Length: 427
Image 1 (cartoon, rainbow, N blue to C red):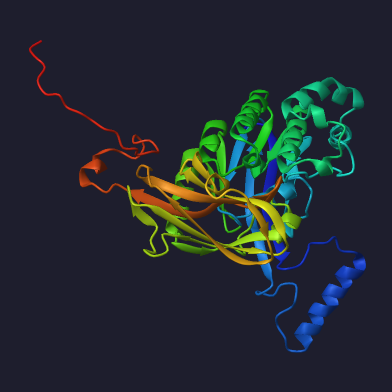
Image 2: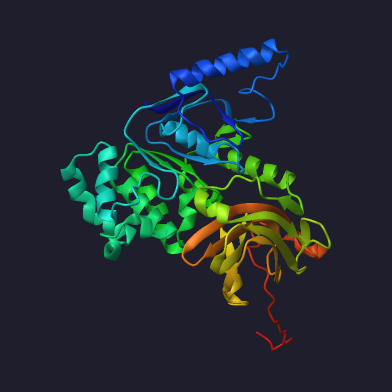
């Protein structure tokens, strides 16, 4: 057992559904206690703070210890408590019960734009974030050029970050968090906002941080990245710690869990969104997704078309919309992404209302477990995004093909023309 970097004991977090969390004054605490007592005295045993119907345990009795130098993956379905855990470790929110001890300077990358002042420029926010991390100006000066080069925002360095796209926010935030050398780096699923090249660069940087002996907690749906980067893994299930330790055991457990909960039709309105800007999520929100709605099944034979029906609600007029559907393999690899603009162009204008969008995809995928990724953008702004909206399994349509193991069959099952010319003479 090495030197501890993080120690968590009995950690629990209770949220009031439909209400913003606030920091309570002494007066608030006293009034809550009096209100609870009045409910009991009046015969109503359900006190408003602890009522079953308006509260949810985002975390419940979670305990673990992480050694210095560990790179720990944190996985689980949406709503499992991953982001809440990182927010408590970052001291953004307080636990309801239990405690978390963090030994060392923490750098957090939890949500796009978190920690940025929108009115300040990119240059000013680099110094602001560095100061928050406890660094001296000369330390920030020494790493300033590295941060700018990595983030690829040199032309916009003196532009207020409120004008940055979500991708630019993420690139600069990651560059600051990774280059200002925190002893403990907490990374949520923000890397999915960037393009493939930048994701690769970020994962390489996390590898460098690991090689330098720093501690990393890495929340991700990219299971291949978790497998390659992490030496330990935490699997959260409905706020509780289901697996702590071996990476492969946690990943297999997680995949079994998501397959068991697969369904051909899912409501998405109340599904937690990973790191979506709350203001943008109000403008447009996916409400339901159906896979092969006429057949109503999540087990599909190779070659059978994939038909996806997406329902969404638009709450304000939007312009130049693009919708996307991605197919993600069981290890987190994005196999392919389809954009509505490729066939129907941009949706120039959309007024408030409820809509249905259908996408028919040629099934060229090999046998295996996959998930649908849904996304929507308006001009340069991301709207709604769900990285694992619905899981489904593809099985081989021909019985002899079952001899080919899924792990060996790759991701695609494209057709090829073969010709056999028979005997061509003696050797």
